[in-house]
Length: 76
Image (cartoon, rainbow, N blue to C red; front, side, top):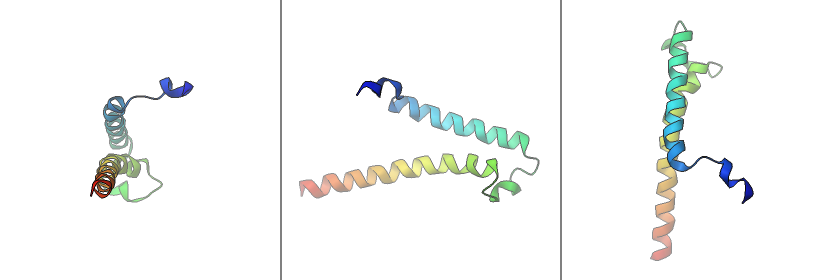
C-alpha cells in the first residue's frame, strides 16, 4: 500500500465533504439569480450542491445498515 498515505482519513473526509458541499451551496446561492426555483434542472450546479449533502448521509446510513446486517447474519 504505497499510495495509502495520499488518501485522506475518514475523520478528515467527514469534515471536508460537508464543508465543500456548503461552499457549493453558497456559491450557487450567490451566482444563480433564481436559486430556489432553478434547482430542478440536472444541468444546474445548484442541483448538485443540494444533492451532495443529502446523498452522503444516506449512503453512510445504508452502508452501515448493510454492514450490521452482514454482522448479524454471520453471528446467528
